[in-house]
Image (cartoon, rainbow, N blue to C red; front, top):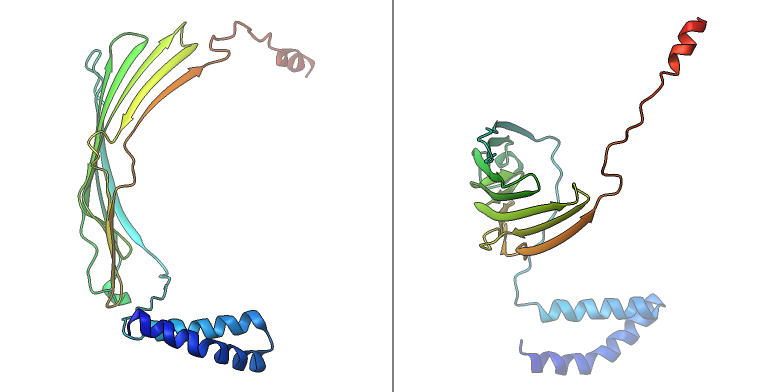
Length: 222
């Protein structure tokens, strides 16, 4: 049905249909909604309509392990984290056409440089292989970020300059597998940013007060 034909039918029949609905429902707003729904179905008569229903599942188990290394090499303080996770979930038993329980591997590498007692720089690289969560499959992802921290006046003032997702690689990419249906998303959520933060620390020096041991007097009385 063309738009012109639909408009002709709408102008010709809407007043009559509205009056009929009003005599049956005795409510103006409800009558408008009913008649509008009829015309919407007429407009979409040639289109395919997909109905989706949410279904809860009673449990989900995941195997997870990690290795964390943090050597101290002078002013260079790197950290490395390697992760493994795998969900134990029978997605096909719930009607999905895909078996979504393959293992996923991730890594996080932080290169931390202590240039001086008040100046520190960090380069972070994080990534993961294809992973699975419930009925959703997440595609590969990676993020590269930088951070520079400088303190003044014995940590009273701290200036931090950071840049996140420098190469614009952290995209949201996933596919959800249902019963004879698939839904997917592939977009960039604008996670790349540069931030400058200034922090002032109150009471940044340690107190010189020492307790007098008031509890000792109570012990002597007992």
